[in-house]
Amino acid sequence: MTIPANRKIRVALVGLRFGGAFAPIYHAHPDVEHVAICDTDETLLQQYGDKFGFERRYTDLNDILASDEYDAVHLVTPIPSHAEQTIKVLNSGKHCACTVPMATTIEELHAIVAAQKKNNRNYMMMETAVYTYQFLYAQQMHERGEFGPIQFLRGAHYQDMENWPSYWMGLPPMHYATHAISPLLAIANTRATKVHCFGSGTMREELTRRYGNPYPVETAIFQLEQGSANAEVTRTLFHTARPYMESFNIYGEKASIEWHMEDEEPLLFTMGPLEESRGRTIHTERIQPPARPDLLPEELAYYITHQDELDENNPHQSVLQGNGHHGSHPHLVHEFVRSIVENRQPRIDAVTAANWTAAGICAHESAMQGGKVVEIPSFQD
Image (cartoon, rainbow, N blue to C red):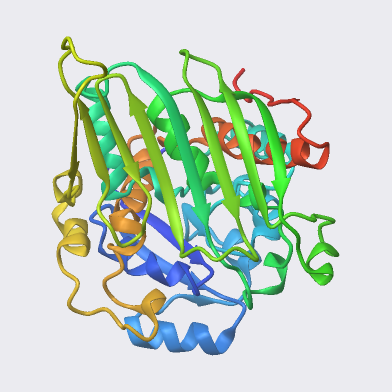
């Protein structure tokens, strides 16, 4: 479905607990005509709608899919529902954006890719990690050749999930690993083809029941399809004393970046010239990756340059949400909207999303087999 040149697109946002971070950005986008909000919690729906002035309100996704008032749906719903809901959105003839992960089985990934192709609608996985200040800075360095040949990549995502909604309890760590995997595959512009992964640690018995997963921590080594570099990823969900962090490290011949702590700036290492002494001198400095309002329309740039209306007690329902996940939210909205308007595939399309997500699914499969190598399927034709 091509949107007429003289018409803006119409978007429905489903799931307000985290989705509330995105609805005002859609509303501000110059290419969006109107935005509807949807949540099964009617109290939350009405409170949010009243606070931010959203008149179109739904408690049932099916009502949105049956309506011809919407061109696109952004799903910010629980992980177990992602695959089923995504396929329903695409089969309804609407474009679909979905929070991570795309799905939790290889079969579901294939089904989503097939639905996207069959219906000729856009699918975009809304992966925040490839639109952060830190990643955009590293990406620009790579495009300028400042890393030189990339020799190795490392990612990690540490998070304690105690007292989160029930579907998180005992979730295999690598089933929610795209925040750590995606920056590495994106910067290398490739996919992972094989994985060895080992589970680590011990977990309370009640946490193993839902998914049969005994590991609070999983660490994987990925073989990449292109180039000579490979990647290592660690993911934790429970029983590990470490503050929250989505970390990526890029090690190049000429320069390297390490980002290890959420509230600290990345480290940049620069290789000095070859001299007669043993080893080269390596310069170390803290860098401050800038915000990138220049990549956004003025209406959305505002969301990463002004932070004066945030509600510290409930940040997911604040007016200005752009700085969430290190400035990524407006970039995600803009890319999804523009891909529809321009009648092109988004940057994180169905095939890319499936390749990124499959790496984690296969990693957990390897861990459950004691580290046995697992081939990662490709979703490209």
